[in-house]
Image 1 (cartoon, rainbow, N blue to C red):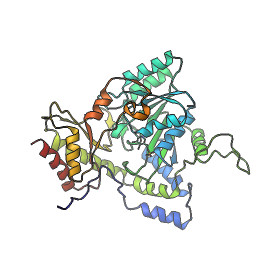
Image 2 (cartoon, rainbow, N blue to C red):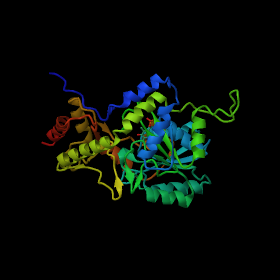
Image 3 (cartoon, rainbow, N blue to C red):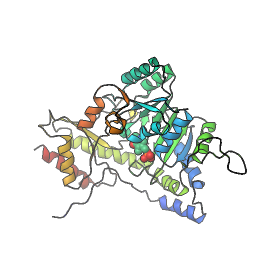
Image 4 (cartoon, protein in one colour):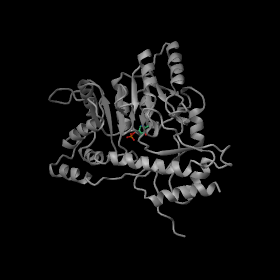
Length: 379
Ligand SMILES: *Cc1c(COP(=O)(O)O)cnc(C)c1O
């Protein structure tokens, strides 16, 4: 039997104009981690986000989180509170700085930071005489976290927020674009994200002085001198002018990709909502979700015994990629000694949650293939 064509979770989807920016870079020999594509990508991102904040193009979202922590003064043995339910890249930079992560459970409504568990964690650390240096909040799968609640705690306890919007370019909380909500925001343009630069990221900050600091740190922290003089530890974290060219082409199709992601989500929601035990994350008031990945929760007590793993394996059999939700950091072997506050919301989401193929290159017959496999299991 022939293997049916592969359906991907979320793969790069070029818009068509990317190569012209790359050709320009070659024609002008801007083959470097600076140049007109980098400068213009930053301006175009700023326009996309409708913000006066400053944008710094970087080599990855991980690099952006690392620089954000450095700029907020996170150092050895400091505590950083971090959403447990996320990709490891949200938390790893805490370790790069020799600091200690304290993980926080998710809430049911958004799957993001639970404000109650967050406050518990803050109070506990303060009682130990270690006020946390930062809070890392994540808009998982494009669903905005509850910014008002998190912001209130951030102000009450005077702890800045690093907003991990890696999965949420195009999402909004009230009228503000995700990425512009935190004291420092970060974006990712990795190959699996809603738009890609092949690899890349951005840091969004409040002032020109902070942008200058981020660029300084990202280009090896070279002091002003004719020779190479360094008074701080530097990094090689700037985005290349070639990658930024891909980003400029991709920004032109961001609105289109957001529309396509929404159509994919709507298709699944219409087709699967009547199956017993299958739930979708309910839309939240005053938020706009970019639906980077469409996700379902499968309750095996209500689904006649069908589990999310049954669905994943059945899809895999048909050459269709799907994936369990992020495994929470407090359950990861690497982070087994970290403190954790909350209950088992994140653990349950991991147990029963599945990301469905959300590739914008899928045709309607591809979507039909996915749905048919799932429905078959419930017959
Ligand atoms: C992808 C991702 C990152 C890391 O971005 P990279 O550009 O891959 O380094 C960070 N946080 C979350 C939630 C992500 O999904």
